[in-house]
Image 1 (cartoon, rainbow, N blue to C red):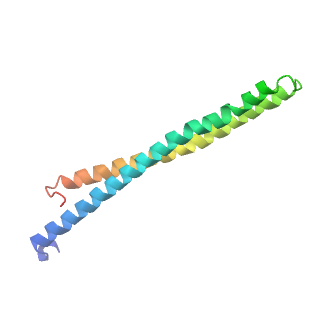
Image 2 (image 1 turned 60 degrees about the vertical axis):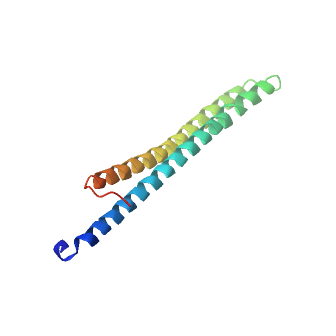
Image 3 (image 1 turned 90 degrees about the horizontal axis):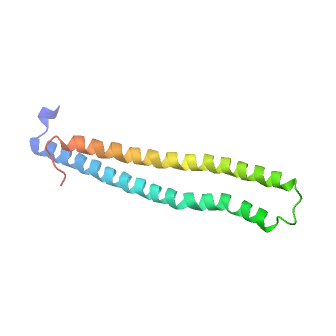
Length: 120
C-alpha cells in the first residue's frame, strides 16, 4: 500500500506525525509541570491546615478544658493526619501519572524521530 503513495507525500505525512508527537509531548510535559507545582503549593497548605489549628486551640484553651478533652483532640489530630495522608497520596499519584505520561510521550517522539525525519 505504501508503494502507491508518492515518496514526497509519505515524507510529509511522517513529518506531520512527528510534529504531532512533539506537540503532544510538550503539552504533556507542561501539564505534568503544572500538576507538580499545584501539588507542591497545596501540600504545605494542607499540612498547615491540619497540624496547626488543633494544637493551637489546645494551647489556647488548655486552662479551660477538662482533662478528657485532650484525648478527643489527640484523636482528632490522628484522624486528620490519616485523612491528610490519603489525600496527599492520591494527589502525589496523579502527579506521578502525569510525569510518566509526559516521559512516555517524549520517548515515543524521540523514537519516531530516530527515523531521520525532523519535524518542520
